[in-house]
Length: 222
Length: 261
Image (cartoon, rainbow over all chains, first blue to last red):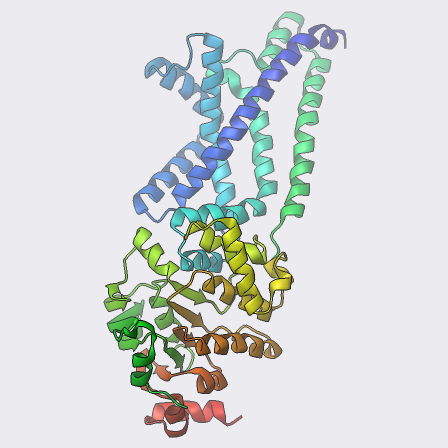
């Protein structure tokens, strides 16, 4: 218990990094996931094929590999640099990799949501003269989102926990890294371990409850 | 009382005698099924055209080709002097001029009744919300649902939903409204309230293509009845002539089955 109290400031600073990553990746992957699903259901076959290929590749690659690629491949080899400050650069490389990965899950959740919207809704939208993008953004996606709030919550929960893999992109600041670093000096500490578990539960559990409640409240009556 | 198509054409506004819609040699297949066979048909301005016939005869498909919800394999469809655009913005613009009322209403489930009627005018015609709302309330009043404007579609009965769907179509000031079996999904006691609205539209001179099994409506409101079976137009005539004096065996056989009970 003493180790937990002694290292609490470091651990909290690390956990704050996880929260920062979660917030940024959460917003970005919802945006890119929505764009991606638009591409996957677009009337243009080439776009659809490209979207499908991207989703299948990114979703089926282990996250550690995605993050390692964004750091070793995109940054070191290809020269994608967000900042000269290594820690800032590392942060954004994690954001890049984790967003690229999580967006595909957002996209697939939304696509299953689109499948819950009766085909007649799209026909009625087209019949009053809405374009494809208008039908998608005004009629289809608002209903699809409401149908998949709970699954989207699960995607966000998985994403928050996935921020602990940040170390794979060479970002040495998150709570999992601080924990490992602390164990290297103090030896393994069960209280530190449990402390981190509790910290994640405090963040993740309310998201589960909130999305469950929202899903009921915002359900579209048919 | 029965107008012929010719007298009607000359009576229409601005005296434009060219048909509003003309289909020339239209063919369509669903896989091996030949659903539309060499269809030639015109709809005049101000005309109420009722399409009847047995199920699976191609009536709905025909109706849906006119705003290109169904594509065609061969032939040409001309609306208001121009061939139907294939896709994109030009097609969306055409559809905004052709109202459509579906069998299953298809009101936008996440929008209020008012929201359903104002959406098209605001997003397609770019009207201000206030202007669109005022007009929408007039139309909802006309179809008798103004007091339900803030409810959601699922809170309304089928007949009410279908009347909202008609108001939604009217809000775009269409040149033509297509009705694809508008009363087929309704409980029997709600059919008349929808038909009454449609009869009112017909009296006001709206150009309408109506696929229906309501023979009473065809008699009262149609200028012309088109009988379709097996993907072909078998016969077309004024309602009086058609119902009392059908020329083909196929039509007489159909009428004997539906008019005797």
